[in-house]
Length: 289
Length: 290
Image (tube, rainbow over all chains, first blue to last red; front, side, top):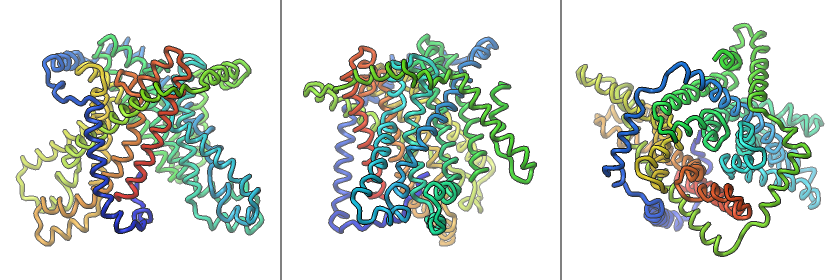
């Protein structure tokens, strides 16, 4: 997922900064550590106090035996389906938001590289006209992405009320921002020869995109989207906590009622669901990649 | 179960040689059915949302957000809450790295019982079984840590140590510790074996091979993953505010429930800045440290 980029690693930093950097880094790290320790009120002792221990013991003994009665399991079918449905529609909406914005936010389509060099050479106005949509799309994506889905969910609760649709919108918007950014990065890092060849034949920008870029990018686009779907399944379970339906809502209810034997079952189901989705998505990724 | 497994299994594309035609039809059909089923189940209603009524409602809500409350009084508090959220994410990530490092070396197959290090293993059967057992147990622990969502961990720890940022730190630390442990173990299991073999050929002991052959290879990757998870954790730390871990998330919840819209926008701006800042910091550190 994160291959260390050799070209980045070899950036020439001056000798002085090479010496200063580790010193500065460790000073900052120590300061952040001490400050965070206090601000986050870290008190490991609390874990071993009598009351904490008693509560943990109550929790652990309360977990067994897990609630596996047929009634309870039947009752969970709807929340389970809801969690899957929210993740699917959330991802679909995220694609619908991320793909067009990602195209607009692709520098090599918008204003750089061989597709644009000739066209905007020497004209500031044309350059500006091409750069503006790019900057706008990138900013929108960044706002969508940097506000966590949970905050979006809170705002959509106000706009459309509680329910699974809220979860879909929250995942759609925040994951749309992430997909859009990654889509544009994928498109920017493609081989340019096919596009050049197409351009030489006089193909329009649209045709270059469809025949020169997308076929090359498709496996990566699909694979990242599937990965995001896996994340969306987890996210849709979490969003249930604030009333978006699904398994999360049940976990929260059981937690609040101190029905820990139900929590165990719910977490187990969530685990199976996530494992199944991971497996499916890995199979699908292998098939496209 | 039936309704769910049908469309889901259909999305697995078949390899081309095994009846490509049917698969070509099955996959799009399966995906379409899955989407329609989800559309229906989530009461997906874009028309209602973007129609005249929905638009008016959203616009009314959005206009209430403006202008953001930028009074110095609130800003000072927002800075404090942001630092609190930062602190939770920082300590949580630190704890998760500790957890992952504690478990990773017994969760990596090639360091525990197979591969080049154990080709000429003279240990007896019981020791070998104990090694495999150690591996299985630590993998199971990592799975457990990862499976329980951080918000559930947070609720458990609120129960154990009371409200405040500390349960948030513990929750992030354990959940992310499971995630990082698995990622770290994959890194260790993927390292090239040639350097290890070369070291072995010089007569290096297992411990020496570990320190000179394994650690230098994996540490940069560990660091990259940890920084990447920190970016995730700053967002999760905000979510944990919901269960009382303090910081920006808790204030967002309060602002929304009390209809303090202009304060809400200030908080959202703070979150945006915070998340962007951590993303940049993490990208910068990855570039400098690797």
